[in-house]
Length: 338
Image (tube, rainbow, N blue to C red; front, side, top):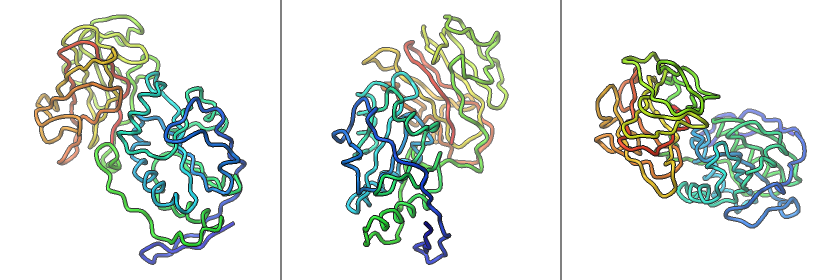
């Protein structure tokens, strides 16, 4: 099957072939549902289905989310069902209340299948966050896309599948989104730092003298200078799936080159909050602080989620980031950049 499209501006739309890639698996493996009763293959028959694999701290998925939200809102009346499949990466993402809170905070009103056992992930043979699978009204997967980007192509495929299903009034206009905060697309031209975990099994370029002491409480120190894309701890930390601060006066430092620096953080105990301060090149973040930082560089870790700590307003150069914790009881999981 091929289609011949024009963009809203009148430019030529490339012909797109949508072969059958297989049958869409059911969602029987879900451990729970948000915003919907359980959805079955029989109940979805006749609907175009967009399955979106996500985990709520994934920055790549966060930057895709404005488009998925907009498609769900625009095309629901035409027969599109968006199903967010939340397959957790970190242990705290298995908690339904955390996912429920994240979905509410992010304005997600379409159905969400909780995939705590990875059953749906395996049924789709999926390996990525985010991943989109497009199924036609007969239950055939006709297209997939892994990662960010290709939003216009994805929406045109939705339009084609809806047209094939008999929805004749879809039109060719494409959504326009106004992304904010962590949902803003990365500054790819200036991005020279890659995702890096704090866990002892997955971290790279750890610069504290003596290296990582897996699973052991240890007093770490940070070198006076860091090389680009290296990071370090100072203070009393234990490094496991995450780095946990055990005593007052701990800090994390990282040398990076990107517009944005994000860090997945959480309090070590439920119902607690840990204050922090962000420094850039030894000075309070000021105007270059992210959405979770005030103009003096201060913020609070009160939830287990991704925190945007740096968004540079000026020229992008190599910078040294530090986050300082006066109190213990904070956990850090992964750096991401944009």
